[in-house]
Image (cartoon, rainbow, N blue to C red; front, side):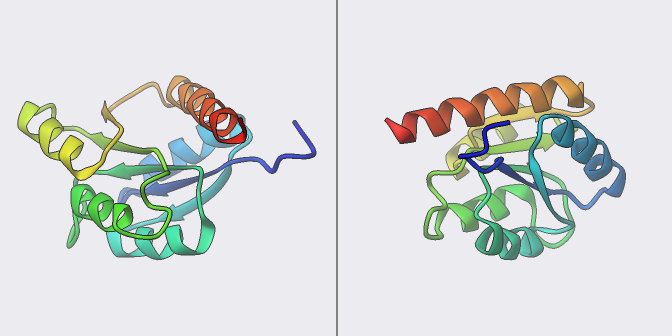
Amino acid sequence: MNLETPEPTVLIVDDDESTRFFLRIAFEAQNFIIAEANSGPAGIQSFEKTSPSLIVVDYTMPGMDGIQCCEKIRALENGQRIPIIMLSGNADPNLFERARHAGVDRFVIKPADWIRFAEEMRILVDAKSTDTES
């Protein structure tokens, strides 16, 4: 752990408590600080409060889906610079395309190997922070 650089924060936006639990465990193992939200609107509020290094958002949530949440975050100050990863149990290619147009950086089909996913996201965040420091 580097004492000069604070650990990155991941914002997990998912209405499913068990998915948030497994993601929290996996991301904690990679030394992420965890912020959680159980809905799109709560995720947007949390984004504004926490300035996360990474956002993981579920596609299917009541009220506001993950694509709408992503579009709203992308419209906020600093919303363009944060990697957004969308999770879905739906492998529809049309959904992938809609998500890409909304600003989603990566799309992950559930269920997934959350430990490996968190490891890959740590590499992504570390590489992005190195790019911005240069």
